[in-house]
Length: 186
Ligand SMILES: Nc1ncnc2c1ncn2[C@@H]1O[C@H](COP(=O)(O)OP(=O)(O)O)[C@@H](O)[C@H]1O
Image (tube, protein in one colour):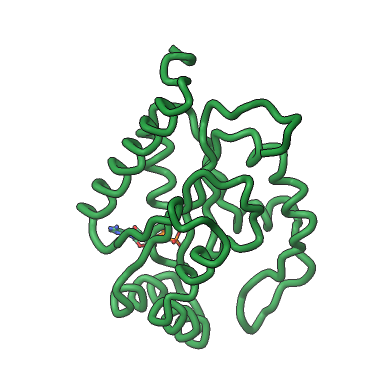
């Protein structure tokens, strides 16, 4: 946080992980269950809707993101708090934005099925599968943020989803209590 910005009354939570691990599913449920309003930003969708990309790669069926434009768009929201950033990478987000970084993980066989159901081209499924096995996003999160704010959670079934979201809700309550903002919003 910079010296001239007011203290946040709600956190900025990054939910990251390989495509298909369950980021959007978690973010949607968390936005519903959170004790404070949280805006769910599906960063991939934002990039498309707002044209924050340089090119579209037909072969890989993916957008090459204009990172400067993306960061400029996100800055006022993410630095003010009350936001869930849902994206398959996290290292470009400034450290000062993040109060919690959740890295979702999934068994690679299950992930393969999810990506197949999504109709991804085979090489994109393979690349993502390998990234999950090599825990690329987890390493990225660990090297970009303080270890205390990086949490690795399994996302394989509905029970995982529910317990993960309950855990993040508890974390939000504790975060607010620490900052004496628990009763501010009624
Ligand atoms: N913990 C989970 N339990 C059951 N299904 C899940 C879980 N996580 C993800 N899924 C399913 O996997 C698919 C991909 O999830 P999604 O949230 O879109 O992933 P991501 O946002 O990481 O790309 C969806 O069909 C979703 O319902």
